[in-house]
Image (cartoon, rainbow, N blue to C red; front, side):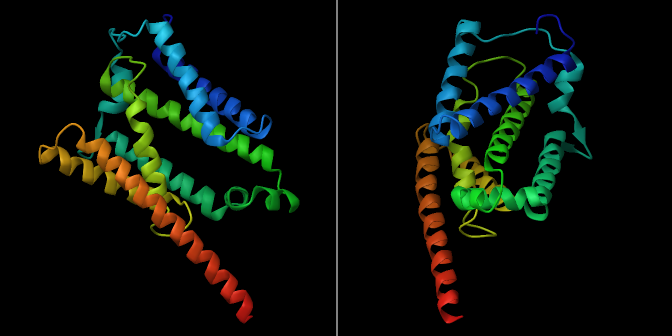
Amino acid sequence: MLGLPWPVAVAVVLALGLVAGFLNGLLVEVAKIDSFIATLGTGTVLYALALWHTGGRQMVGVLPDGFLALNGTFVFGLPITGFYLLAITIAMWIVLEFTPVGRYLYAIGANQKAAQLNGIPTRKFVIGAFMTSGFLTALAGVLLASKLRIGQASVGLEFLLPALVGAFLGSTTIKPGRVNVWGTIIGVVILAVGISGIQQFGGSFWVEPLFNGVTLLIAIGIAGYAQRRKGADKRKTKREA
């Protein structure tokens, strides 16, 4: 990247991920655009810029061994990316479940207006959440580039739907009706096992997106039912009290 050492180039990419997350946060909090529309729109714009910069071609070059080792290293016989995932998962679990920041984020997700009335600075935490998401997305892009050893603008598009499936499927496990870290991991594992099974059985090219779409609809339906059931149980408990 412009002749920069690879650690500097990686740092620039991670910083750009933070900037993209900050812009998304501003669109949601200041411009009051729906979060899904805002992220989809900015993602499409960034995709267009990447296509313009690369001319729609794959970028191929000689990559340093250190950069390739980010994804290609094995630790105790296991890919190092598994340890990245474990470390990030544990860190997010601790923050979301055992710190005030996590409680604030769950409160904002449940009812932002109520959280704001209770004195929580919702704008700061929402923008911070988007910046964290942008940073993790940039990190995933760096690891993916290290694995594929090429640069290609369209390489991440196929991960959009599985990411939604994993999140919604995760809200049906561990803590039904509530998105949570370990539930999301289980949802991703279920999704990966299903797709792997389709590939091993020689399924047609259209079976995988069909599986993703059907799983997303089922996950949203179950998550919605679990949330309604949870709300009904709370109302019942209040009446009995």
